[in-house]
Image (tube, rainbow, N blue to C red; front, side, top):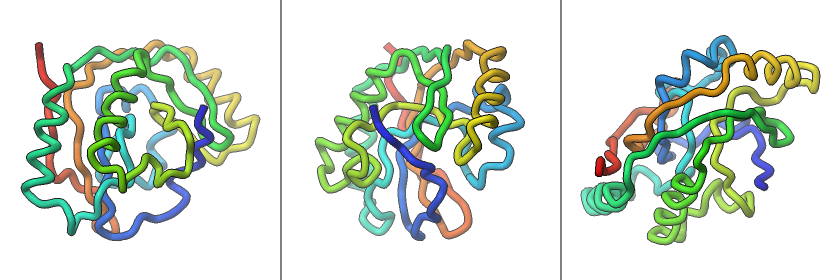
Length: 180
């Protein structure tokens, strides 16, 4: 299992990009915990790959390849039925997780210079972060309250390419998954 730390602990460089499967209909169920996140520009999500290429390297050719790559994956229903932990993050575990792993692997196979989480973790466990950098008691309280709200269900239908501009993440393009 991955040992992801708070990925919010370090401000990204201007032009950093991320491929995220955003879950805006899950976010309201995670209030008040996600309200204090400094994530201007995106919502609750499962990361497909971060960091991706620098913005300056993302041209129409790269965008076209991403369109084709993600169109090769079918949209799917996702359930979040349990919370889990990395040492510094309480997260929701997606079921199924394999489609997320498959998308991450496909992007990394095409762009091997962009390992998930910059190669920091041997296993990029799919997850939707809820809180990070809390005391054990706080993690336990959040997990207990969160348990009363589960399961949460949604549809994974598109992957967004976001670019950090120094103060905010902006969606540059959304790549629909196929509807079979």
